[in-house]
Length: 420
Image 1 (cartoon, rainbow, N blue to C red):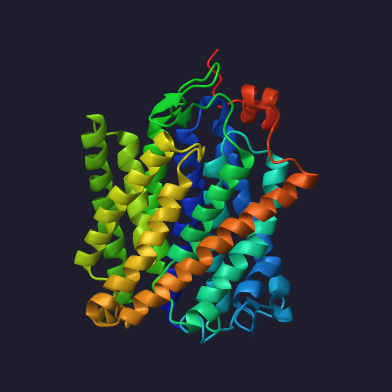
Image 2: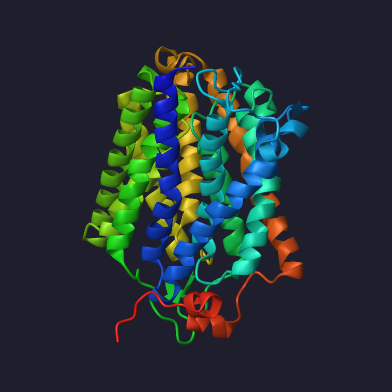
């Protein structure tokens, strides 16, 4: 084991942990004031609950002995009972203790379900959310992570690559978020697009962000934490980690600028929220590619991601009836799909040991397309059915009275601001 590698991955683990509360502020600033606390605390509690799930059985399902490449299971990993402080798994992370690898991967398992809540914010019952997240982490996230990241996972065996979670984290969360938005339904009073104009429901109001500085703060902390997310996925303090850190930053910057320009051209003004969202989209898109692509490729990936996700978000808001409250699908689902496909195009053996279609290996693009083609329907339909199941015994949506009052008061008995 290397003390330098251990020091860096411990730091990266802490950086990734910061991303879940940062997501809470990012999402919290975008919702209405009466739902600010509930949105932030949902991210907070998901981190706590999934930490326990990951220790008890999640890690075993993902990184245990593979059963036909579909799912893992190792009795000794249940509750982490057989892992000693000196143990190293050379197949997963030869330079660091297994416990540190467990801790690093825990942070990915925790933030992924937290991403979903943005699609059904302001109307999801807290109790039902907790039940759904435990089941989703077990039945949706664990199989996908096993397929892609376990050395014996079947998608990995086909050649699919995902450096830090474009497929495992962002596609799975983005498509699950779309399912959640459809199952839970539109917010009360939300305007409904119809043909070429907006047909407004009775008493509909424009939903404006409650705290744009929170949005910018959350986005900045996500950007900061993402260096641990992507560069930490090198699992060593080496040149690959440096390359991943630089490509991560440049993709985020490129997408922030391209989203800003798209908003400027469409709306006449550069939106602060749009710039923040664009940066996050760039981070999403580079995640699967960060350790495989060059700086110039990272810029292309980021620039394209900002435009593509912006177009999808605006289509969703203006042309569809889907109330994905915070555009989780457009940002994470679409961004993750684009980034995963782009990895198959721009990957360079000189950087990450794998070549993409641009460097003479079209088979890598095929492998990426297969992975995307499998994970998209699995995450969407699996989550859709799981949400319907939970709704049978624990209704997903709060009552109309609770929604009017806001989830801060109705679910938690608290208010974000005491201004009297």
